[in-house]
Amino acid sequence: MSGGGIESVARPGVAVGGGGGANGKQNRERCGQFQMPLHYPRYTRSDYEGMPEWKIDCLLREYGLPIVGDVEQKRKFAMGAFLWIH
Image 1 (tube, rainbow, N blue to C red):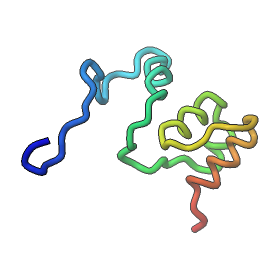
Image 2 (image 1 turned 180 degrees about the horizontal axis):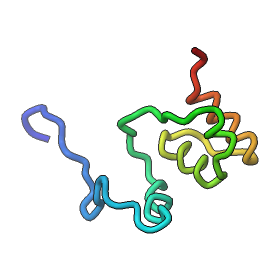
Image 3 (image 1 turned 90 degrees about the horizontal axis):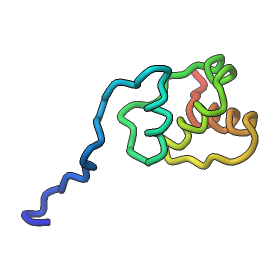
């Protein structure tokens, strides 16, 4: 690293913001590597309550959080991590 700046860590061949493909398959495959998300998730309590397990897993993985337990434990953990009481 020269000049004290920040080097780019972009991976070659990875499209950023590319299409999700039919039925979101590309997004499910892509959620396996941690990359700091740009935005806080904007799901409601009812969104989390109806969210399928694979989507909860992907969301937790996206934010670098542990994915342990059954679907109800993961759902409760996600709601505790991302929902704020107003």
